[in-house]
Length: 172
Image (cartoon, rainbow, N blue to C red):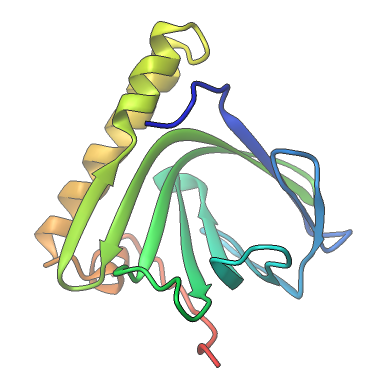
């Protein structure tokens, strides 16, 4: 179980080509791409031994951030995509994602695991998350689980029913 903490807030500044993590560290983004349904980013992950590159899609309408981590040798995980439950706000070129603790680990076309609901409930009990945000996080999680399960845990198949097509780079 992780230590209790306020929701993590991350900023995606397309005009500055920057990604500002919850600790305030600014990372250069190689590519931002906007689509009607969301924002894509691709960037290196310096200083992270577990992975060296990441690609993410913020999809505000689903309340999700989809990430494909490029794991470093010896740190591979049995997953294809990592989904964070988020609230996304946009102010011009700046997108802000507030992570609402709950995550889904997807092995595409195989399985789905929901994790960190305990963190959400502890944060709510401690007053770090409103009842409205906790309910939003759980509703978002349930909708994602239902959508993925109904399509055999096939991410592209589920998202196609929402008129969303996520495109990814190929791992080197």
